[in-house]
Length: 145
Length: 336
Image 1 (cartoon, chains in turn red, green):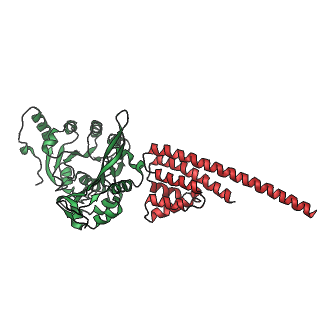
Image 2 (cartoon, helix red, strand yellow):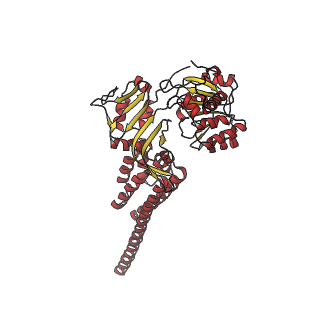
Image 3 (cartoon, one colour):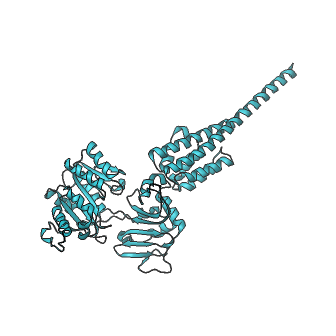
């Protein structure tokens, strides 16, 4: 269950990075506006770090601190994912649109990879649980007979 | 002329890094009102410019005309922090302006940027790196500053006005007031007004009661053409006419029956008659009056109003080598 949630979390993060790239390219809005807008969207409601970041910004915390605090406190990222997310936060808004887009695509690849690994783990453990369950059931059946 | 200069100092320093901002906010209201520029250079003393001339900013939140041992130095970290805050941590949003050497704050204050240009093989500037100084020009709002000029504009049925003046003389402030008065019908019948605000410093959302169409961030020549095609303005207001393309666009617009209020840089009459762009602009016969403003010490104050034909005559006279011709007899209006 937890693995499934983690995969969903990473899936939404990949979607968020894709949307960030598109939004920066299309509207050229400031990060404050983009974060505010995305945190209100239903598909990103499960991304705790995005919602926290928006709340902190609304409280007057500067973007770099708001991003790093909220990513550091996120529930489902592991250490490596947090590190990459913090690096992405430092890239956001730091340069012109094309440069940001190129750099963000690298991080998109990283997170696609994390998602792939997470899904593989989910499948692996799902089959392990399935086999264990089947064996246990079969064992119990033999004992009962 | 009413002169109520609203205090915009506090909003202008909002982009400066926290510790320094707190000290600047402690300046007396009188100094704040008189200040029109804050110069922040990397590892150099902070200098304020105002109607009191130039002054150093000291650690006890005072200013002094001579450098003191406690005059504050603007550090590298403060510069980096200020630049990031200025861009709201979103360089992509301001990149087009940054390569042109400025960022406009949302309150309308223009911040000039100096650094090292990064050029493409074709010679185009693609970025500014190693930013070394920031110059915050505090936008002023002087309600009613255009009233006298507006009365002249309407009474004399002027076609178009060209406002010239040195930096800080209040050209943009006058345009802002014109836009408000003309579009809201406060002092005249409502005119369909379009403001072309390429640098996004004429109109600020929070401090503008006009009722006009505003084209922000558009290149002027494109905006003029677009406005005529789609917004059917009676009058177009735009800042700092400089290029041939802009002059051509104005000429075409005037031929379509649109009136203009525009500005150009010119420190004095000599500069006015010696700048080729102004000559080219006047030769289009788009403007019938040229208003010369005083200087930064007397913002929005009219020094003289000339008939554009007289200015052109003087340009031709000087070119043909007849200097010192007295055109005072031809002056239409003397504000003093």
